[in-house]
Amino acid sequence: MELRQIEYFLAVAEHQGIGGAANALGVAQPTVSQALRSLEREFGVALFHRIGRGMVLSAAGRTLVGPARQIVRDVGAVEGVLAAESNELTGRLDILAFPATASGPIVDLIARFRRENPGVTIRLGDLRDETQAASVIEDGRCEFVVAHLPIAGDDLEVIVLGEQDYLLVYPAGTDVPEGPVPLGKLPSVPMVFVPRGQSVADEIEEAIGVEGIRPPLAVLSEHRDERLPMVLAGIGGTIVERSVAEAAGDRVVVRALEPRFVRPVALAFDPASLTPVGQAFVNLVRASTPTHVPPPTAP
Image 1 (cartoon, helix red, strand yellow):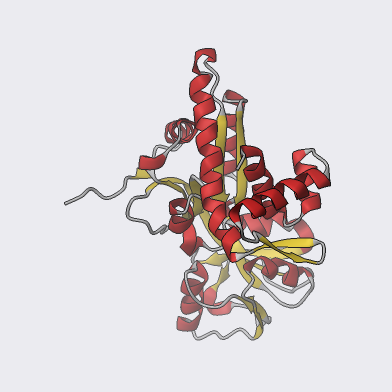
Image 2 (cartoon, rainbow, N blue to C red):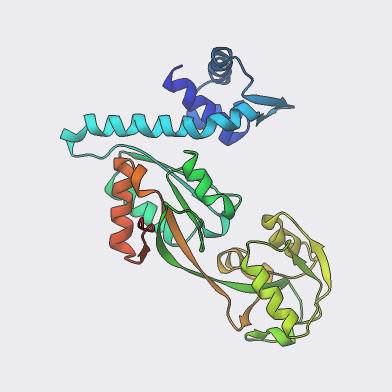
């Protein structure tokens, strides 16, 4: 097994295909295909299911992702140690962010870190489920997670980056009074909601129910990312994070809620398993945002 094969495997997993991986790596598609086939022969298992032109991780492939990323980070850490005399930090930084939190403070921190450490490569990927924040760190899939609090994990340390509030968004042209909208006076506009569970939307829906208001349901979508496209398509209104609402610009009608609903956004990591690059990033984040929650101490 070679490091190059591991890097190609991770690129195919991230881009869900040989073509996207080859473009990202700057190599020919047959080179990636050959490296992947060689890796599968060495392990004796199929790492991907070939579906049309796409590639979907098999069970064995999903198991390999975490260790593979850890290998790449460890090699980067070794390279950093060997290059220490140059006073330039090198290596890799793996961050998974819940889509609604992948803007604002974390982008500013990454930009500053890159300016100060141009020898470091950074991967900012998607965390699809905030409840998996601890497990993706434990499995080695990433070194850091950015998500809304609370973030479960007994060994994780948390640094609060800021807060995010939630806004009402409606299809363009919807007649909604100016200013914040009290929960007890929501317009009778069909709404797009997500299933209950592990979301501040639960708290908002409960508060709406207390006010005795039952806006008609247009769609109950298990895909959080589809809420805004459905609003843009005119299906109904919804409640989304400010960063999502602002991304739509003037294509939707946006109103604040009264009262406001706010959740902190935080960076989580395991301080016992940080690479030198990871520790340097933590130092920068702490200096910029000093609010942090340390892991619990043993009794």
